[in-house]
Image (cartoon, rainbow, N blue to C red; front, side, top):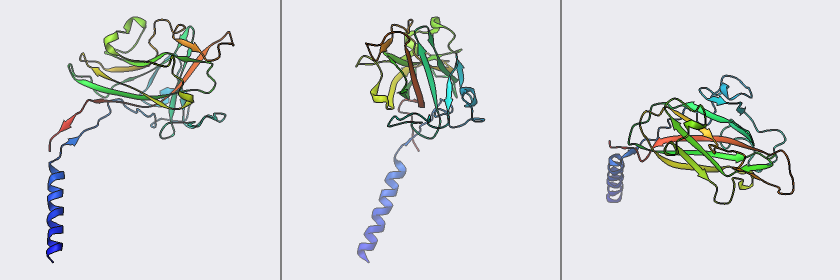
Length: 222
């Protein structure tokens, strides 16, 4: 009986300690960050509400039939997006955030990208831009409003596997949109040919999935 009594006392103490631990709130303010919610099956990203496109952004609900990559299809779930980059052409994903950013607050951004198997070039940089009215042109790109990852190995390839791009962002205040893509003023110079012995047309195509943007270390005491 004494052992049973000690057992129940231990359980009660453990529950009390757990109840006093802070609750970590993880609220993704990028709506539909994994693209799983959509109106109907379509190749247009506009079906994945409320996402918008700059140029023409592809939308996938299943793996591409001839994709033989080890991690084909979405990173999680079944849906993902695709962005195309050529020497004088590039595409962007854009969405209005669930709430405006608060001045002086630090946020943590994260997304996963994967180079498409048919690409004959890759990019040196890839990132996210935070603005009050959305991206319109290269003139909207301000370094302080940008999380821009630059490849340490020359360009983003990673064996056609998913990999994470992330960073912290200190809000100026009032930013309402996030735009995803390549923000180099000259995308041609940002492209690396994968086979240096082949000349002519170059294209880098990246799949995108699992985008999140949360307040850094947001903790609420019970």
